[in-house]
Length: 251
Ligand SMILES: [Zn+2]
View 1 (cartoon, rainbow, N blue to C red):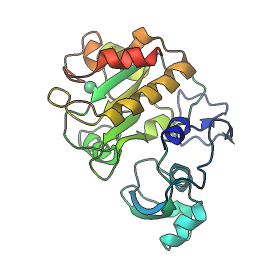
View 2 (spheres, rainbow, N blue to C red):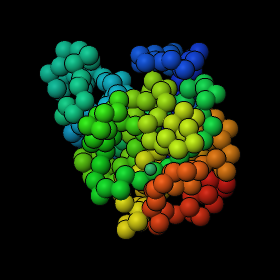
View 3 (tube, helix red, strand yellow):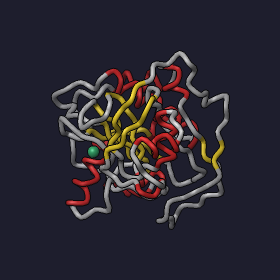
């Protein structure tokens, strides 16, 4: 399970120059077998319910659970994949343990990674998407959300935001112009009062490790929201485990 989790990456290679991208990007997909092994017969499989997150397609859900798209369509009496809507409850038959499907795009605009907490006990990308719309933003402001086992998501699950899939700028840190040059990652929880869960930290180490390698982001440019010049916040909280994160990132 752990191995599959850490190797669950899909690299998308395409000539994507994303400064003005608003439509979903559909580059050719490259699935290198050595870093994306299919689950073996040893994994335990179960029927699961999945709430469709913003930006999720049938293809993405099929990869996350290693279940053919056709099987998901049939189990839900759907005729075509275009019928999916965010918030929809889907039966995923005979699903393998979930793996993150992280697409890495060619881009030169990502110079920083900014880490946030949600300052809420519960959350998911769908939940924050609704909240950010209610504030007048264009939906979920982060690029990734790492969940804590609430709102129907697993502890340590990495959710990919539509902003990442479309390679759009964030709406998570206005200070120092970070919205235009930083990848925004939000961990669900309030880390002024709670600890980051082990699974959330494992997921964060995995995700930041991938991103910083691909975009050549030095450790000095991996910051908490509160560490950004002129950001007036205590995000991601006093208990955020900076020392452990940084020591694991350089291993
Ligand atoms: Zn923040």
